[in-house]
Amino acid sequence: MKQPPLSSPDTLETENSELNPLDERIRSLEQIFNLVLAGLHRDRALLSTRIDRRRAMYAPVRMLPRDILIRIFDAALIESHLSHAWPPTPNLNFRQPRRLSRV
View 1 (spheres, rainbow, N blue to C red):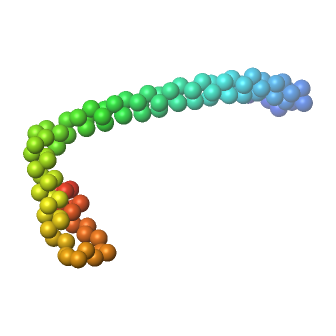
View 2 (spheres, one colour; view 1 turned 90 degrees about the horizontal axis):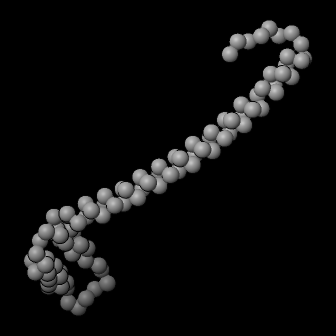
View 3 (cartoon, rainbow, N blue to C red; view 1 turned 90 degrees about the vertical axis):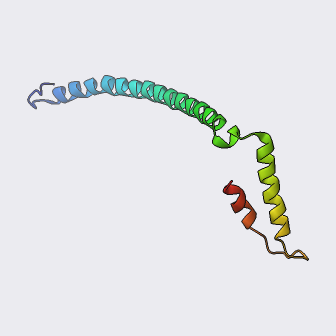
């Protein structure tokens, strides 16, 4: 935009009057941009959730037969119960979750 020489208050008023429509146009475009951006974020979140659910269906633990999983967890629970001292003490045994996390 070509800058006219500074000359009079009329020039300043004219330039100020040109600012208002530009500011309104900027605000309008920012609102549209924010709406589009919010929609894109929503779509991305939905797609990401769908991908995570599909990925979970193909997790290796889901491919093991159910009877093998039951045997693994039963063995871990039985081993945990056998390792407790008798009579039971208020101390918690945190080894069991670690054993199950190695499965």
